[in-house]
Amino acid sequence: MLIQLILVFVYCSDFSGLLSYILEIRELPEDFHLKIGIESGGGSLKVCLNVLPENDPEYVKKYKSAGINKLFIIGLGPKLSESYANIKSLFEALDLQSICGICSYTFAADFKLIMILLGLQSNSSTHTCPWCDVNVKEMEIKGSFRTIKSITENTNLWQQSGGNITKAKDFKNCINIPLIIGDVETPVLRYIPPPELHLLLGVVQKLFDCLELENINVATEWIKKKRD
Ligand SMILES: [Zn+2]
Image (cartoon, rainbow, N blue to C red):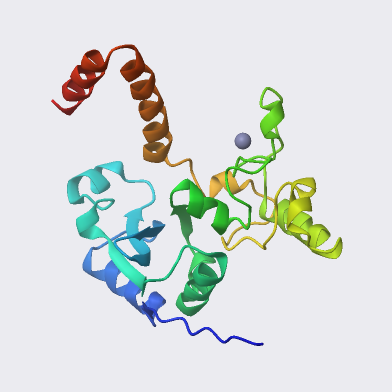
């Protein structure tokens, strides 16, 4: 039985027009940078945009260009789950490809979405790192940088081998063609910087859990101090 799914989302139908308008209104220099955020929360999947001058930290500070008040939601799907197919559809509708060919850009997302964007299995898989192909059992050995090319090649090899999901670990857990746009031989780290907040959340939670086991009062005090 064939089931047809209909995706419902809204998106900016003239991304390049919106960008030209933002550049004009904000008097941004020609060398600008796009920060494209993919986020899931509040019951929807969103693609967000911040436009920043490439080499002018003073401007960014003064106008808070990276802040939430200068952020545009350029695509939004209510009740849309975080899946490869859904993000692919949103990206295609927005035609990110054409814009990303003419300026510098980075993608921002949490770990789950980063793995999806790169066409990889989840962080609980054998090759857990989005940026390199290190094996989780050999973390002391440095992995090779992942690139769009390496992920695409591994995905193709996995599919040619039959596309058995349990065998994906033999292909660095690459199961889809990356959704990010960029030079195929450049490390994907260049396009998706590590998400500082999400990295710290895990570390701080671990520290808190250990401290709580030892002494709940000290742990609670520590959290209170951090809030001050
Ligand atoms: Zn790594």
